[in-house]
Amino acid sequence: MSAVLMGEERAHGWQIALAVGAVLAALPWLALGVESTLVLVLFAFCGLPVAAPLLALRKREEFVRTCIGAASFCIFWAVCGFMLGTFVLLPSALLLLLAAGADPRRQPVTARFLGIAGILLATGAVPGATVLVWDLMANPGLA
Image 1 (cartoon, one colour):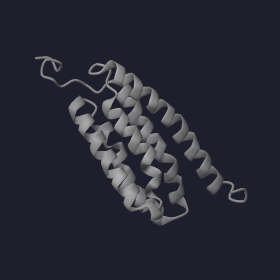
Image 2 (cartoon, rainbow, N blue to C red):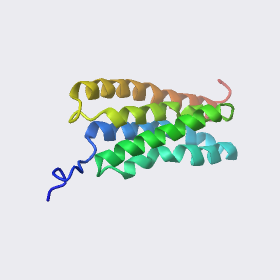
Image 3 (cartoon, rainbow, N blue to C red):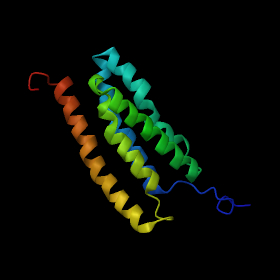
Image 4 (cartoon, rainbow, N blue to C red):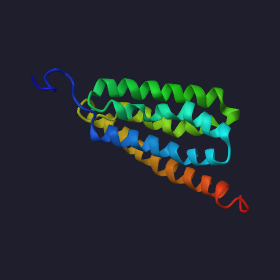
């Protein structure tokens, strides 16, 4: 029996792209762990679940549940650990929430809107975080 007949579709390419964007949006903050062990431990505990949806690509429902769960976990820690700097996970959490709904096979119009919103968020979050980390780490005299 085929996987489509059993209801086990793979995650769509748009969903996968947004989930990869969420991981990429969190990676520049890992560079701050070079300076501080606290940041590295916080990122390991709070930021690693961002990559969890990439382990569930073969089943769409599992991918969507994992995206929502990882995003909820990141939002919880972004709010509770705001003073510790975990708020940097908010763009990744938002990208994961957008990835959960960006399946054009289910809702074409909504998925297109969520995909465009995710692209705009990723194009701002990834380079913005990278430039900020570059200014803080590589060129601290200008920050």
